[in-house]
Length: 448
Image (cartoon, rainbow, N blue to C red; front, side, top):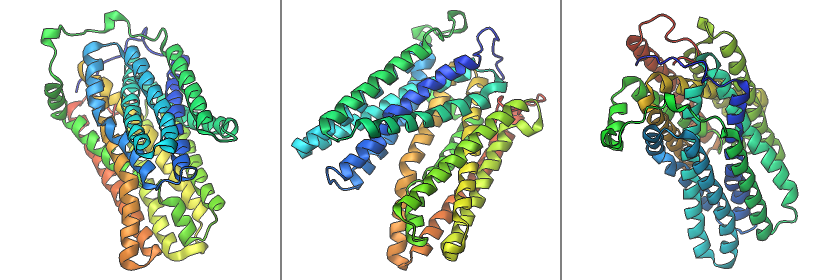
């Protein structure tokens, strides 16, 4: 792939990067209401089986397999801000629909459940359209040396969207009623849409830099996707994203039950494990954002090294949890969990920065499609990760009658996936180096 330099007159400053980070925060604000608050209400207040919200969350990830199609649409149309705002409008509609379905379930269960499935599918479509286009715009407008920091900013702001929304909603949703839930969700959706419009205002790519092909010359989606899949770097990086995110997402649903069953933790104590993991992830993300940007021209700042190190660190931390499963309360579980989060954060944010670099280097004609392909790989991995991990724990416990063995097996499998991901990352680096023999091709932010 040839490297495509960014015109400095079009490059985003830190203020512009933060503005786009606000879009990611808005996405997080709407999504967290559906995946956390509405999830809890279905299980607790409506006494529905826990598998129902689990299927709904998996659906919203599975629908995001259409991300490549959205990316292709932005490639041939070239109007990324329109795709971002349009995607957020769809996401807001889905979020409000999910809240309305709760009211329907209370009145007529079956139709309410049908409405919930439709709403979560719409949420997935909105996240796919808005999120993919946002990353493409960042890839186009952020200088290579700032991509690691830009990835950190957008990811941290998404988490901030989670935290602020849940904190505010926990107050305004008391006392709970289905009508109040709908009102709160509608308010959050409108605010998120307004923030998105204001954030992309004036950040439109100059017309001179957009070369949209004539309609008769535009390739079909299938032809364009086949062309991108033939690119060795794009294909191998998609496999890396899938395997690494499968391991990453598999931890979420098993860590707290592990603390409760093996370490006899109370719900509050096991919840603190999740807080420690997320805290470690934030530290890891900020670490990469600061050091990779500061040392962008040096070997130590290469995002490939950060990705590989993050994967190996995650594998070692998971190996520690395997030991914890057999050692029990004597193991330093809290420190182990923090290290796991730290390594997860290092790998995740460096992978996002690398996505931006690879999408930009491959040429403007396929930026959106590449980003969509990798986004789809991530979405499928997230849809499968928690489900497979939980199922593996249940199956192993049924066969072995041992919670210790069940969690040890699952953590071992996740560690092995991270080791495989580190090898796939290395393979992507080698492939990219052969295609780009010029010195410094693997510097931070430029590529993997």
